[in-house]
Length: 340
Image (cartoon, rainbow, N blue to C red):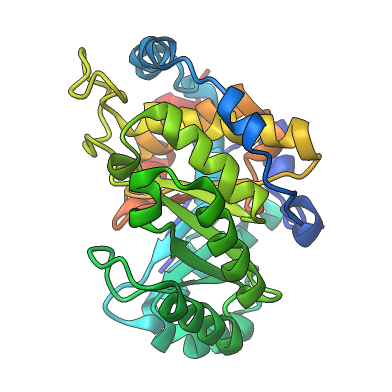
């Protein structure tokens, strides 16, 4: 059920959240891929110590001020990816109408996507179509993240998911290829998966700890985008607490998801400069509203506010949507927050 929120939003933020902000969806996140350029990859450098220092400071001063917290939290709802719950119908209802009682057309705000297994794709598509929400369906094209399936099996998963009508198909880059840093083979494998996805968008998950360093994570992200990925996301980050620690638990690669995320975001920015294509960024295991706002501010700082839209940013977490609903309810009932 939607949360009733009689919130007096700032005019600028309200207008930016109106239906239609995701118009031109296919064009904004289109990526035809480019030829693999090994020389560019080998010359690419990512400054890990600087990234670690920047992210240690990020959590302390990058959150939006109180006057803008409600508006940016609503934007976080609009780019949220709601994972499958116990009931598919409830998952789709929550994602299609996460809030209510907003000024004007803001009541039509919906989550960017729902993340479900292939067995639930058809039902999700039907429910979302009936609700007339703009929510998309993301299918997990894998059985377990603990198994590195052969490419022929993953090609079958991707083909099946695309055939069922999933608008986005999520695959994990081969751990075996990432472990040995075989960029050529990884590029060819991801290119084949992109072709199997057909008209569906391809979301590539990059196994951080297998890659071993932020430098390798940056290069793997570049390879995925050169192969045609529409979204890239780091997974298995060393410390998935969502907090900014005072020291790094893994000096070689940084100790937080934010440092891993920064490496991927910088790769997205460099790929845009190289190819002219915009590629989306996805965050998995986003723990709270606070973390969601930190991610949004980081993306806004590195890529610009135009990237904080459903076609180019996804925030996913088991209880993230419900936490944002609770935060918005608290802000709506705390009149002091809007007395300024």
